[in-house]
Amino acid sequence: MEPAASKAPESRIRLSIIVPMAVDESLPEALLSTLGDPAAQIERILAVAGAAVDRPSGDVRMVNAPLGRGSQQNAGAALANGDWLWFLHADSILPHGALSRVMDFIMGEAALGYCRLRFADDGPCLSRLNAIGANLRSRWLGLPYGDQGLCLPARWFRSLGGFREDLERGEDLDLVVRAGRAGLPIRCMGPRLTSSARRYAQQGWFKTTLNHQRQAWRLIREARRR
Image 1 (cartoon, rainbow, N blue to C red):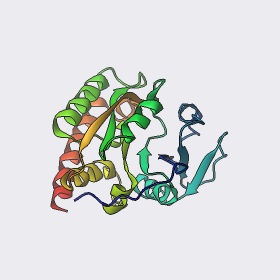
Image 2 (image 1 turned 90 degrees about the vertical axis):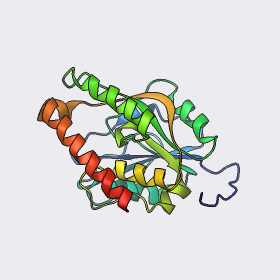
Image 3 (image 1 turned 60 degrees about the vertical axis):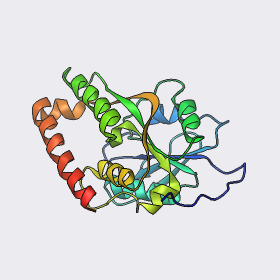
């Protein structure tokens, strides 16, 4: 059953964009600049861990949290005022007009939205196959990953209990599985998001791909049992 919705005033923030930052990541100025439409009812939140970072330019809120993507994203969501939450990785690159398409998406019925994925040229060319596989998996099985920019109503996020913080990786897929089993539709929002492929370059394409598949199916089984 869908959580009850409350009527929001016109001035209410419609979308909170939450970006967790690893301790070795630089400020995602380029990403934030594509998400700064002053006419939109949005807020941008950086969830940082460890050492303090310089505040980015513009109207960006910051929150500190224990290191871990799950805990950082939960901290950002706890600070957020938006009716919808959009979780983006700091290395994400969005095309022109992506924010407008997401704003159109959140004007519709409740769903968990994701972007189509492509990998940047900072990894092996075989990573293109991983992007194709991710897009097919998302479309056919309703199982997008966090690097595809997950977006869902805040009331649904809270009713699901947010991200698990005890997982080193895979908190995104765990949330998707639980959301789907709770009845929240999984839908593509339209924009094609570019993500870094450096992990495939650093750890090897075959090894990384195999590890991802093993971890994914283990998490899916666990999430379905939960």
